[in-house]
Image 1 (tube, rainbow, N blue to C red):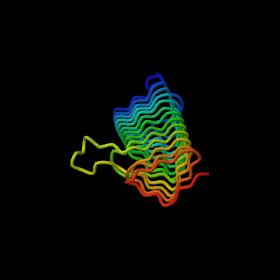
Image 2 (cartoon, rainbow, N blue to C red):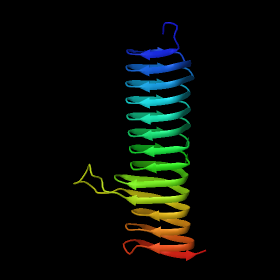
Image 3 (cartoon, helix red, strand yellow):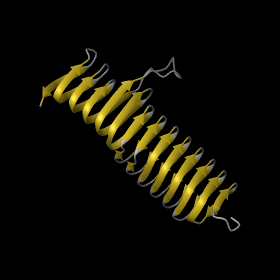
Image 4 (spheres, rainbow, N blue to C red):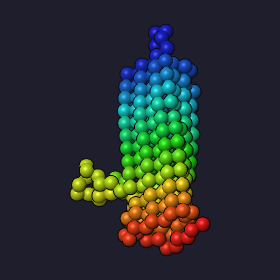
Length: 236
């Protein structure tokens, strides 16, 4: 590193943790201890054996963090795997993100795919990709555009929840739209399409086309599309 506080990896090797201004990995790099940095850019393959704290993370190749991760701004074009908890304040996922525990932050934009073993908690959650969440997905504003694949969460809770099918212009001959599955969906204002859920509970609930719902509980308004199935609806 020649006395600087940057870590530039063009070949392969293992490097100590600590604090760096900039980390850039174009080859294969392993960081063996906790690391803090202002920016962490991965063009090749990187592994962090412990925890990562960073201002900005950009992954164009493959990044693996065995511990926890805390980042202010995250862009994933390739693949990123976090073994523990991840606090990604502002994240944009165009590739694949996998998290072994809880995922939290302020703003999530998903155009690729995420898989999370725990809960997901954001202020705004905007997905036009796909997700698999083993726990609770919660956000003030949840916008889900079902373009492809199957998205699923154990439970979904929020203020305004909008789930709409959207044709995938990139796959004109394939399956046109995706689907969403959850056991419970609970919010203030809910609009659903192509959704399968056991219970939907809200103040104003609109069940659009392509839904299979066990029961709807609402306090003000309930609208149902004729191309959906709702076994039971009741005003509470």
